[in-house]
Length: 352
Image 1: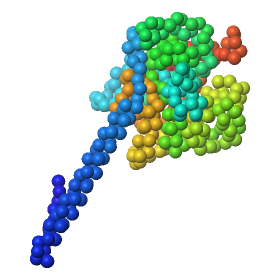
Image 2 (image 1 turned 135 degrees about the vertical axis):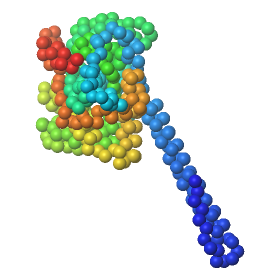
Image 3 (image 1 turned 180 degrees about the vertical axis):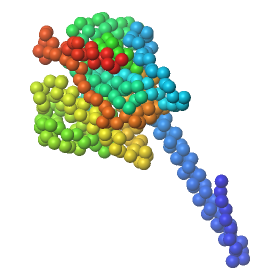
Image 4 (image 1 turned 90 degrees about the horizontal axis):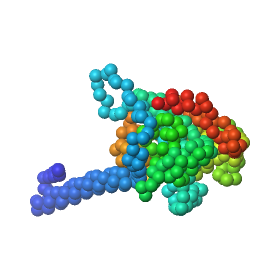
């Protein structure tokens, strides 16, 4: 719609109203063009973010031979919330599975293989206002179940093998099946983020503030920090998540403590950042997340991820508990651990 305003022509030749109409029409067309461009840009951005996400059909691959899904408690409220509020268990892996220059520069693998350096079961309680994050040490010896392969075959059962071998052998499907076999808990969803994407996310958020209790000097992760509070950029935050040799006894258990600090610090940073008032930063964060994400098919769209995020709007970092699966040194190998029972079983039972 254009608004054309004319004024009295004092010159008498009728040229001024014509000029005004042309100018105003040009302005109107320009504004319309900007509006169309804005809509087009928004549409392109949505398409781009949506197509960033990779997915794996976990449910289709594993079928029905899995732990039962949690049954939600019937609501006594007459109103029906448009957002889901039931409990959830999500397996979150940090890996270098997306090969390339960016991952290689950050210590990632090559195109011939992949590793899962971080494994966490995120349990979100019914109501979605509290959560528990359980870290599983990658050096845990487990029974790896038979897993389906993309070619239609199956892998063999392996006893006393390292936990992270499941991902290396059979990818997300085998990682989920191994976790469900270990815990007896159904994984409702799967999320995997790669090295470079994690670093980009931290940078898009303006860094993350973490307090370390001791000096860190790790030649392998290239991280050197004095004890105290630090604002870390993406490369430093990733190095912190991977550090193990510069702290404690150099085992994976020390690294898990740092990862849990980092998870809570990230939650606090996200909640304190006004993304909705900065579309450019919001897009940077969304691009960093979706561009490095692999999910199950239940979360493989921007709409589903947004719905999940909205359902967690009342979950604050103060109400997220971080723990590690109880373990003891493996009898067969002093450099490996096994689940400590009955404590581990009791922990998993509390998440059903």
